[in-house]
Amino acid sequence: MKFIHFTDTHLVDPAGGLHGMNPEARFKSCIESIEQSHSDAECCVVTGDIADRAEDRAYELFAQQIRRFDFPCHLLIGNHDNRQAFTQYFPQVPVDRDGFIQYVVKTSAGVFVMLDTVVTGSSGGAYVETRRAWLRGTLAAHANGPVYLFIHPPPCDLFLPSIDPMGLAEKQAFAEIVSPEKNIRHL
Image 1: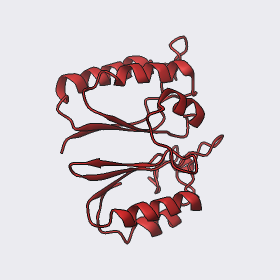
Image 2: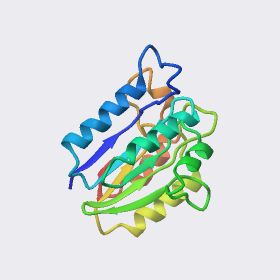
Image 3: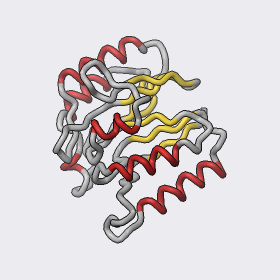
């Protein structure tokens, strides 16, 4: 199975830039490359930080560009995204009973499990008990086939001083859930 995975587009209103860069130009170049070289993908997964400042224009641009794909695009939010704005622009993305953007996608390679770790107002992620309960139930329901987990931010230290403080707060609790599972093929 071929799928596209990208993350951290950090789109901003075109009137502003981001650290001297143009995220919109980079993103459009990415979309063009996917169209030219990877149009045979089964799907695309985007793991968060779609918008850098949760601006409407950033979500509008992202939504407009991914409509160019001939395959489904499965989205997550990241710590820079705003859950309310995200669900307004992407109402087709499932939300669990607790309001988290967590869901399962069945693919030809197995199930893709999208995990929401966003804590409003925090630069780091959290995977609190309600979210962990959802993951335990989801893994139990799909114990007989391959599972691919998608999460933002990293659930383990990368030993990068600029990234690790923004990582998942409950690293050990998360590891205790996923480590025993033998059918997880990707994290």
